[in-house]
Length: 114
Ligand code: FES
Image 1 (cartoon, rainbow, N blue to C red):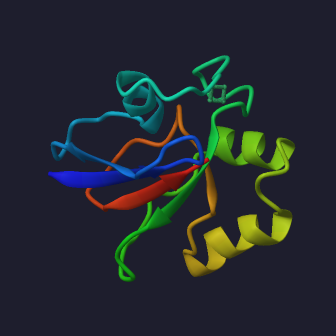
Image 2 (image 1 turned 45 degrees about the vertical axis):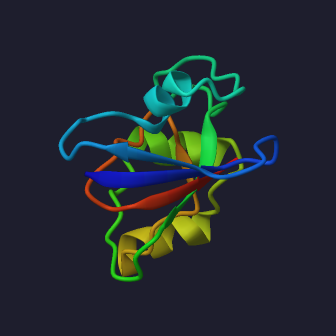
């Protein structure tokens, strides 16, 4: 099991969700399952409307790399700078913003904010 902690301003408390390992669920799937009031348009990584901040909850955590499509859309949406993009490649530093429809929950606990 891995935990995904959601923290958004409309919520009075954080919501901690446990996801079975290898469930292959996206953050957007979880957000829909728990009825988060978030408008996400395409669900295919093409519009940027689902961008959320994702932070690892373990300092040693390795985050899933950005796909070319996710990188392109986050750059286009202004959620990722060229500098952050290069840092992610060169230093394996995870970007702050991810597309909820493309981020598949792995084996690292994360905090999701939007
Ligand atoms: S819903 Fe369009 S990029 Fe995620």
